[in-house]
Amino acid sequence: MPERNGRFITLEGIDGAGKSTHVGWLAEHLAVTGHEVVATREPGGTPLGEELRRLLLTAPMTHDSEALLMFAARREHLEQVIRPALARGAWVVCDRFTDATYAYQGGGHGVARERIRMLEDWVHGDCQPDLTLLFDVPPAVSRSRLAKAQHEGRALDKFEREAAAFFERVRDAYLERAGADAARFRIVDSTQPVASVRAALAAHLDALAGQGAAA
Ligand code: TYD
Image (cartoon, rainbow, N blue to C red; front, side, top):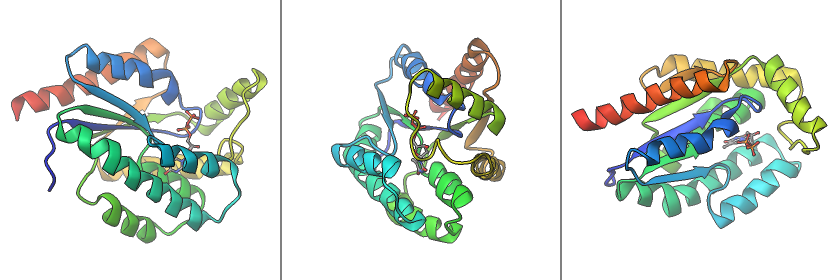
């Protein structure tokens, strides 16, 4: 196992669940505790990853190609950003990671879970998040938030334009994964006001920091 001194935190949830509202705050909350924080995102996080993101969010492609490109971007991201940061002791806050592939390409688009598992093993079997914060809202709430964003002039991407049933499946897949790995996942009720969500996030982060101190 490669050297790893930092902590790896991932943020997940259906589109419109409110991740973006909290990601900057979360990184700042960690930085004031004195850690180096690397805030990054998937797909993306490297020049090639951002190119792939542009394609993934706009170009029509098969669901298998989507899964494969997600993992190609992820491999670059791991090698160039995530592993080096963890090795030097930084805390990495990553907006989406492999749970999103299980939820979107697997749950949403029907790519076989075993195939995703094979790619996961290949690309980062030895590097898993320490903590995954799952921002959870019912799809109806997410849709009304996306409709508001669209109304305010933001163009929706390929995934955000999917039908309600797609988001139901994505959310179900996320909740199933969270249920199967309660040690890693924390489900955050993202229908709550921003201040309550932040209080919950702070408690989860502080618990992770405490584990570090005890180790
Ligand atoms: P998102 O993280 O919601 O970014 P923004 O805050 O800019 O809206 O957008 C990324 C999209 O990519 C999102 O719709 C989910 C999708 N996605 C997958 O389908 N599979 C994956 O493995 C990842 C990482 C993202």
